[in-house]
Image (tube, rainbow, N blue to C red; front, top):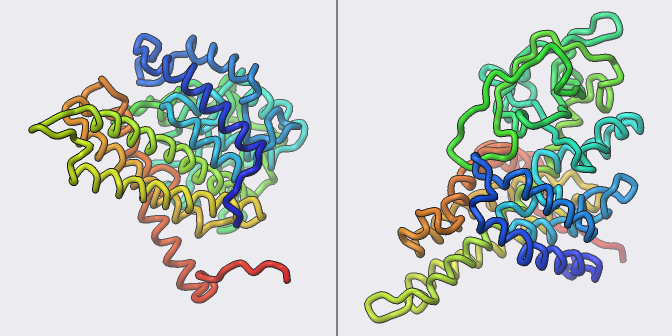
Length: 402
């Protein structure tokens, strides 16, 4: 692949960088603008979103026909990394999970009528959304084949019963995608349905307390006790739920990595600024070999992560599923983010452990990175299975035309 980016992508990157520096970082620094869950409060968020829209930096990931800017996955990698220099960056540009992944899969899989009703309001920022797949044991987690929530067809309608948990954003969401079993077929047994929060037959059992700061709407446990949906709520087609999860989760895993790289770089920024100004025993922290080794190793890790993410983004742009590339990026960048926060806190000492910087926020957030959208071990098993099955093809180079 060619590692140069187009002038258009560079223009978006530079304008995002300026917006983050001039608008978002000052809001991040003002704790009075935060909500009780460690996220940016709605009034401040709404104001920043209006500015982002006016500057043409809104929903870059979607096609222009959907209200976006039509960036490729490579373009998204560059821009998402820049957005997440601030902990509040992605949500300002409407590029944060779970809306980000939901919008992209709706753009690909929804009918025109479904796009008008379910996608457009998320794109405009009028509503937020959630993706309800994960279930308590013995239900499905990383393995969607274990999903136990069922949608029984009764006449022209489907009745959904079951339980989901750790559903990101559910408390604030208006539009939901729920994965349910419509048959016991191992390949064609799952179906994706759309529903609105105001429809009867379901409820939020609880908002689950977590270690880290929370996305708007938290992480919720949901009970379906007779949600009735017409056939036009099926997304992609009955029995196509497994295909839909693959369409959604692969790119969504990679966009997590794109954003996490921005946070990892922010950790190095805070660590370096402190080390260059903190004296101890007659020497700056930045001049100590131990600090230089830590920072040099972290810089290398970030660059490896960028290369893995860019290769996966390039493969997606070529029409590949990029399963190998995405799993590698997910494992590496998730662990990198945790390491970056840990090293930056160590260099900052007690200051890093306090709320005087966002490092403790990033540290708590980073621990979930190794769990969301597939734990490290799941992706390691995927890589082993792909390597065992493909043998030499696992390592092959793409060959261009003569």
